[in-house]
Image 1 (cartoon, helix red, strand yellow):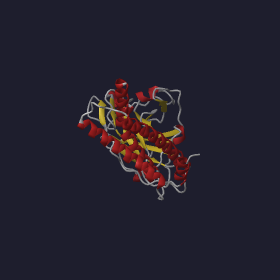
Image 2 (cartoon, helix red, strand yellow; image 1 turned 135 degrees about the vertical axis):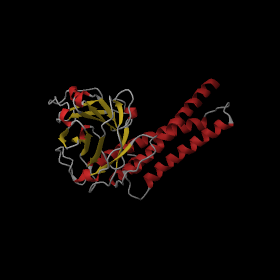
Image 3 (spheres, rainbow, N blue to C red; image 1 turned 90 degrees about the vertical axis):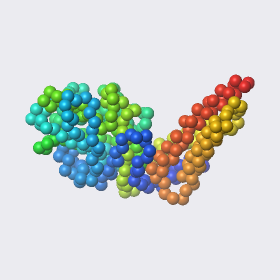
Image 4 (cartoon, rainbow, N blue to C red; image 1 turned 120 degrees about the vertical axis):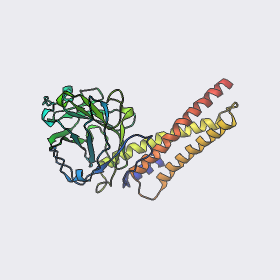
Length: 332
């Protein structure tokens, strides 16, 4: 076992995650999830303490509608085992809502008054679709793979002005966990049929259809960690640490290629740009080194910020390294 792996194991054992902060995510919609001390009762009433604390989402935008949009609002909370979602669907025609499907795992659930939500635990990785109608019938899939099934519960309810949906989704369904500092892809969408007026709306705009993970917003896991060091924190820390080692290796390889290669036709401006990229890469690597050597308690937020800096430095540097290899081949 290398010294670096020993450092990573020690880091995992010392984790004390801090609250998440929104990073620069390119203008994407962001929602920070509330870490609940007590889980909600999944009954569709949305009267639990966590829903009084969790922030409401921003307004939905129309994807397809025949008239003025009926607004929707969602809230997200979580604990060490589950992600919790509460959705309030404002409805001016409660008496004529479409509510036919009472059987789970049918795509026709989405032909009723229904909510759909999408989760992507890792950028560029698998994404998962969940849907439930105003009767509480539910549907789930991994993208379009309907054979996948999550461990989750939901319940629908009504008020004088809206119908509501409350869900609990086990993190074990994804073999990933929500911990303070983690960032997942998220979108929440609504299928409205009341009175024969088809209306589709969405929190994060997805022109052309809901199944567009590249256009999902971002779910940031906020709050403080639970008491002690839970299994979720260890798993997510180990995953982040493994990614750090891979990014470190690739950056070092790219830097070595550039420093030993030859690019005689490079302009002064291009040389300056490459020097800046090398400096940015070295700073990111130095940040990883400081993270491993620090005497301060480590946390998942710091791991993920460090990996984000490594990833940002890697892409342009690997492109430059490829160009150096190409020029070297031509020179030979």
